View 1 (tube, rainbow, N blue to C red):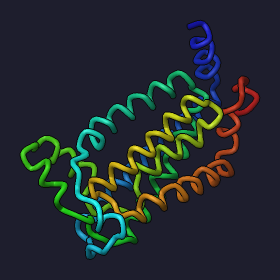
View 2 (cartoon, rainbow, N blue to C red):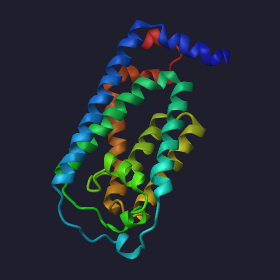
View 3 (spheres, one colour):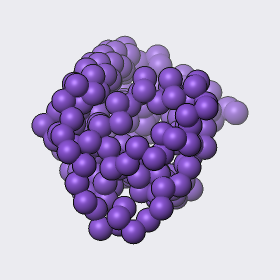
View 4 (cartoon, rainbow, N blue to C red):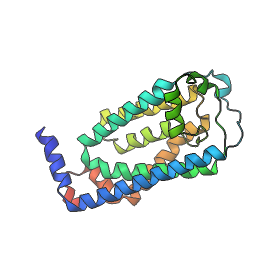
Amino acid sequence: MKKFIAKHALFWTDRKVLSHMAISVLLLLLSLCLIYFARIYTADYSGNVVPDLLLDHLPVVNVSYVFFQGAFLFILLLAGILLCEPMHIPFTLESSALFFTTRSFFMVITHLSAPSTEYYNFIEHEHHIRQILFTISSGNDLFFSGHAGYPFLLALIFWKMNFVRYFFLASSFIGSVAVILGHLHYSIDVFSAFFIAFGVFEISKHIFTKEYALLSSHDVASQI
């Protein structure tokens, strides 16, 4: 507990840290706004359904628990991890903002319809789930998969922390399998997500250099 308190005392008492935190939060909010409007755009401008080697040979599976309850649990655990490791917060928020901004760009320029509508039949009677689903996704916001790419990005950020790294890698694997079995994404959406997430991580390292230095720093003031 003393170590936990010391981390936060060191982190939140530095004015430079607070200014960087404000920028990080602002960037994240702006990226979420971009995702929101990109989702609206994909709902109005969708293309055709295309063949997919994996999906054409796999039945549609109800993955609602992974897609909703699993995602909610994932967010809670991420918040807990950041609370325990406050020095990771600025870089995590900023790299997340770049990830969401990149995804919103690809969503707008890639016009495909969802691989299958069968999944939505599973939740036809669960109106609250359908309402949540269409609030966060148009169904046509496909390229690239956030369920595969975002946990992988976090695994790269927390790479030096073994247990946390394995948790995010496992989350990325589970999310990838779920969206494929649910026919919520094409295979290319999933497989490309890992390469794009890695690219976002590398770009973030070069843009947010001071925040990245905090990941292995015990002296906040000397790095910001």
